[in-house]
Image (tube, rainbow, N blue to C red):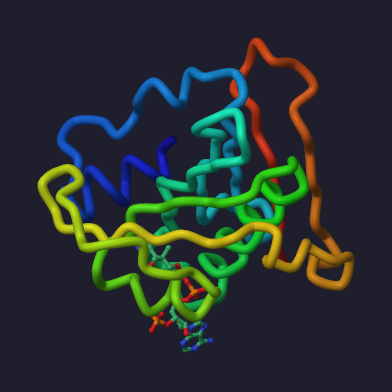
Length: 163
Ligand SMILES: CC(C)(COP(=O)(O)OP(=O)(O)OC[C@H]1O[C@@H](n2cnc3c(N)ncnc32)[C@H](O)[C@@H]1OP(=O)(O)O)[C@@H](O)C(=O)NCCC(=O)NCCS
């Protein structure tokens, strides 16, 4: 939450006051945290939006001092693999225009014209999860720690630690 606040509220100023919304309280929402060593440096959130395989990924954020180090790429691929492994068919995202190339390189496709989201133009993008490769052992860093939530009364969390 602190990473998201720092990036979306303080740095980008795209969301006023707080970016926390009802999806954060939803018991099935998956929060992914990326760490370098013991430092949390990035995050993404994913959740099911219907009962027939549609998922959404959002709140992708990497702290400014840790960008261009493939943390963002790994977070997106991890979110895609996680939704695919949970039986998802399609994942949607609203992508800030400057990040469209980044998502295209990861296999995402345009889904219509840009729309306003929090007053800023965002490109709707989508990826077919059945075609997305699942996360293989070799892609998980040696010191990775993947932790699935044990209890549903606390926010679910997946922790990915990268060397
Ligand atoms: C978008 C964001 C999550 C990307 O995270 P990141 O960790 O920097 O992502 P990656 O390192 O995987 O890739 C980012 C870019 O750095 C490049 N890169 C990665 N490693 C690199 C390296 N070692 N040397 C040079 N460039 C590198 C990638 O090719 C990519 O290029 P692109 O910007 O042209 O797409 C991050 O910039 C961010 O948090 N931005 C602010 C919030 C935001 O925009 N969120 C997404 C809303 S849609």
